[in-house]
Each structure stands twice: as C-alpha cells, then as structure tokens.
Length: 295
Length: 302
Image (tube, rainbow over all chains, first blue to last red; front, top):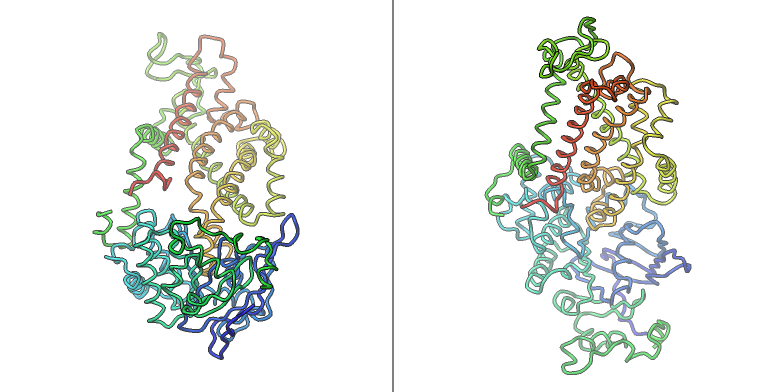
C-alpha cells in the first residue's frame, strides 16, 4: 500500500499511532477502527473521508473519550499538544477536552439543548472553562455570536434552538465550540444536514475561523466536494483502515489506492449518463478488506 | 420571530417573558383555566379555614343531630350544609377537610416526584446492572394494585394519617421511576448530551441539569395525576379505617363515618365529602392537562 509519508514534526498538535477501537457485540469483538495513524498540525485542515461505517466518527470520539463503556480503545501513541492522553487522568482530560479540543456535530438542531436559550448554552461553556462572569461573560457571548455571523446577536441571546433555523443552530454550535479558543476543532460532518447554500456559508465560516486563530481542524465528511473546498490534507478511510493519505492536490489528480479511485469514480459528475459504479465493480470480494489493503 | 429580535435580554425580562409564554400556552385550554380557578378556590378555603368555618370541626350540637341542609325542610341557616350523625356542622368539617386533602396532595406528589425522579434518572442514565436492580424492584412494587400495596404498607409503617401518606408515596414510586427512566433513556443518546459531555459536564450535571429539564413535560403531568391520586388513595385508606382517625375532618374519613347512611335518605352526609373529593381531583386533573400544553416544547408556539 502506498502512503505518502506521515507528517510528524515537533509542532504536531494531535498525534495518533495505531489506534484500535473495538466494540463488544453478541458476535464477539467488532473492530470499528483498525490501526489508524494520523497527525494534525496547528493551522492545518485535515479531512477524513470515507463511507458510512468506515470508523471516521468513532476514531475521533475515541480520542475525546466520548464512547460508551463497551468500547475498547488502544493506541501506541495518543498525544495532544505534547501531553500523553493515554496516561492522562479523567479529570485532566475533562478539562482539556472542551477547552483545547472541541467538536461540532452533524445535526445542529439536536446538538443544542432544547430547554435552554442559545445565549445560556454558549455562556455555560465559558463559565465552566474560563470562569467568566457577569458583564464580561455577556460581552464575550455576543462577540462570539457576531464572529459566527448571527445577525442582531444581542437580541438572539434569549432565543431557544427551536426558534432558529438549522443553519443558525449550526452557527451557535460553532460559537460554542470555538468559545474557549480551542487548539483543535473536530467537525463531524458539519454540513450534512444543511442545504447547499448554507453548506457553503458554514464551510467558509469554519475556514475563516481556522485561518484567523491558526487552529488545527479535522473535517470528517463523506462529501468529496467539502474535501476539495476545505482540506489541506486528506485521509481516506474504509472499514476502519486507512486506505490513503495525501495532500489535497495529489489525491484528486493521482489517487494511489484503488479504493480512492473507486470513491472518486462514484462521484455523480464523473459518470454522466451511466450507472454509478459501486465498490463491487473494483473488487471481486467486496467485503474483504484484506484484498483491498493488500493491493 | 420578530418580537424576539426586538427584545432586550435581561434576566428579569426573560423571566417575565417565560411566564407570559407559559400563561399563553396554559390559557389556551378553557378546562385548564377552570380547573386552576377551582383549585385556587380550594387553596383559599384551606388557608382561611379558621376564618371561614362557622364552627370548630369537632364541636357537637346534641340538639341538631342529622339536620338536613338549609334548602331542605327541617334545615336551618345555623347549619347551611346540615349536620352529621353526632351533630357536627358539615360545612365546617368540609372546610377544614380541604386543609388535609391539599396537604396530602402536596406532600405525596412532592415527595414521590423527588424520590421517584431521582431514582429513575439514575436508573436510566447509568443503565446496566444499576438499572436492572432498580427496575426489578419497581416491578415487584408494580405487581400489586396500588391501593392493596398501600394497605399492606400502612400496616407496616403504622396506621394514621402519616402512615397513610408514607404508604401512598411508596406505592406511587414505581410510576415515576419508570416514566423518568424511559424519558432519560430517550434523551441521553441525543447529540446535545454528547455535546455537554464534551464541554466537560460531570455526571450529576448531565443527569439533572442537561437531561432532566427535557423530560419535565411528561413528569409534570404525572405529578398532577399523582396529586389527585394521592387524595383519592389517602381518602380510600381513611375510608377503610387505615388513614386519618376519628375526629379528623379528612374527607375520606368523613365518608367512612357516613357508611351507615348510604342507604338512608340522609344523603348529605355521604354525598358532600364525596363531592368535595370529586371537585378537587377534577380541578387538579384539568389544570394538569393545561400544564402539559404549556410545557411541551413541541406544542409551544414561537
């Protein structure tokens, strides 16, 4: 298998080596993530691409410690900003996650608590992690809402999530996520639930925020369009394994792995007038990862 | 939408706005408003009982035993609702009885809510063995009809009003535990809970601050039902002689004392306490319906 060399410098923000996540099921252990390596640096946008069930989200949730108890997580190296997250105590991890690493979810409307106003929900994060209070807190919340492009933000503080549109809710989610100036932001399919024009706005917003604060950004998606739009580097993942890692230009111009080729060939714009190819057209034994990995 | 964008947000105004929204949702149901009015009437009666009642609840008038209400022949304004078998004024007893019934309702509904929801939330949130143990215990409690269980328990904790209240609380517990557990299970896998965990919320905060408010709509309705059920159950225990004892003007006990008159023409002794129970329970149930309409975020208009 051909990998472009994994970037690993002293300034790497998140470093993962050989991450394995497995779940206990009735049929024994199921490996959702099988030996993923990745590396993100400050100011870099990394896209993780793969179809449903390829372990994109699970690997990130594992890093954050958000998986249920029946998940087994192991890794050779799991380091964030020089701190070893494997040996870190739960309390330290809780302080780190949410402040230095934060995450945006796929469904903006269900990701906000329906019982509280959006202003309160953004303020809560600032209170817990930065200890802001009173007028300073309020000012910072308004500032954040403005930064994510909520018009008339001062008046919107008292609105409930159900009074806002999906796009606005996603903006609030982003405001919440960047509230503590995180060093790394993980966006888990941030635009899947939104329509195309709003998608573009949200992606532009994320890129802009990332650029201005020099965050690392991991973009989890299955949309090649989103990848092309935002990423510096791409990891293609299939059935819990890394198929290919490449910078954005070479991925689209010279895909190395057969799976990536199959993925690109399945883009509707590349197959006008014909049946969309499936992975079965590329591999005889579709479910056999070994065959894919061995080529 | 527009009225929100023009509002300035301060906590006092926010509270006023929440209250306005609540009243808007509540007042859309006429039944709820009527229920609330009757309920408030009973509360006022209970609060000012010593002022309103013409006599003390345990004074006997030996010369006016079994006097009918004022509008029937033989009745007099001295005893507007008649007197009972030992010559006590019915009106005074009913007025003081409101204190007992409301007290019972508030105490039982309040305590069963606190304990039931606490146990249910823990059970739903942790799942696994904790959940298993709690739910099997609740299943055992549920295997008995509530009143039968209350009868059994009242014999264990002791007869009398406080015994009846405690027994009723335990008998009602499983309903709250099950309801809150189910609601928590439905909510806990939603993204906003993960987001709160991500933001660093601990278990207690997740359970009671993040998840619980989202389960409140159905729980509040259940509380109003428990309130009226509690009045009925404690009355029933009183009727069976396990609740409040003799001179106490608790409505159920009054009914029990009137048992001998069920087949006679002395209808007021039996009917009036029963009517009082019916009215209060009906009022609470109606108000409960309105509460659900006002609290359910899905029925909320923005």
